[in-house]
Image (cartoon, rainbow, N blue to C red; front, side, top):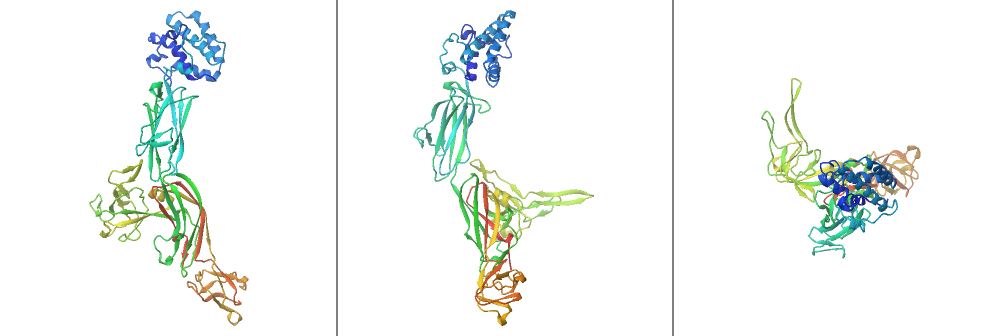
Length: 557
């Protein structure tokens, strides 16, 4: 179709049997008591357009050129039966419109050119043009810089001014493609074919930044916004550009179980730099953990997302807050002020010098039953705000409040900095803003090997002398190798484990082995490798250390 709604709108306002003074618009304006339901002068409209214009444009889109002849034949047939002067003038205006549009839309023979209508742009100069949509990607910008397109949709020959200002008050120069202190805007960006587009080259940054993108409808070009987009002549959105954070994934022991003392998960970790608050990146990972020589382990189960944990620090207030029940009982030392409740959830674990062992954030509820009825003496939520939240870049970043614990705490807790541990993907997201998931997790132990340093005593013995006893747990480890009696399904080592260096192992069955035979320890090890994929659906505000807690899937003697 070669016409636009702007052509139909022009015809309504400007085309009549004797020029614009006899157009349908003028006839309606001159007879407001006769034409009430379709009178643009009275404010009647559909989506901002004259009702008649919108209706005829819809039919033209549906039926094409045949719609013009259909209406012209119908209206001409009505003329002899119209007796009222106003209605007759309106009908002649309708016919003049469609005779004009039939030619303009390329649907029929030429008619004399209408008054001053030389080009579409000239014809629509005094008619309101609408901006129906402004579209651009306002997700977080990468710190290395990105190009983003700003797309404007609406009526042909509508025009806008585009301005981009960074957080330091500098203006984007669309010619030099750089930000400058000199005020600058792209003026008179004109829509053609229903749209216009411009690209902004956002630069590389060394620190966090933000940008305000403003698209102004040009009053000079008679352009307005659809009310669903903006109720003024201005449309603005903010974009944020952040530097990268470091995410580290490693194995470790969180609560310091003594049996795992000396375990090293930090040396062979997985580290990746990710843009703050960015969405959806996925990486394969490999992490390795190594126990000390005398503290081997075995795998209990395959790790899951419930076994990953992060730590956040908070500062406790100077004194506890009493909990008062309905019957006047005061519960002390279970409710404490804290400097920041953002991200805290029930079930998170607290650790600190003066924190009672096994403390978690928890609701407090005192319930009694009377004559079969449940009566709540008091209920205290685990996390309670007490101050106005601090908002940075449209995000809540800090808010003072109170927290309730599942155990009473010593008064020495006052003013302490404590660690708060969040286990599992959901609590990690709450505490840090990182939305992560581990998938395709596999665990492999590195099987220790050693050699015999003497032949079996007496030709056959349950005691075997080896060069290195590392990696063995008594009654868990088994051994395989040349000369091992295969019918015994790899004998169990019952003594000699938990040690390093040369010495003897005792088997649960006698073996006949020569000197120098290589043996492999089964089931236990000092080295474990975990592989899988880490999907980072959302990046948080700061660097993060995510620990895969070995206490949850490894065991030791």
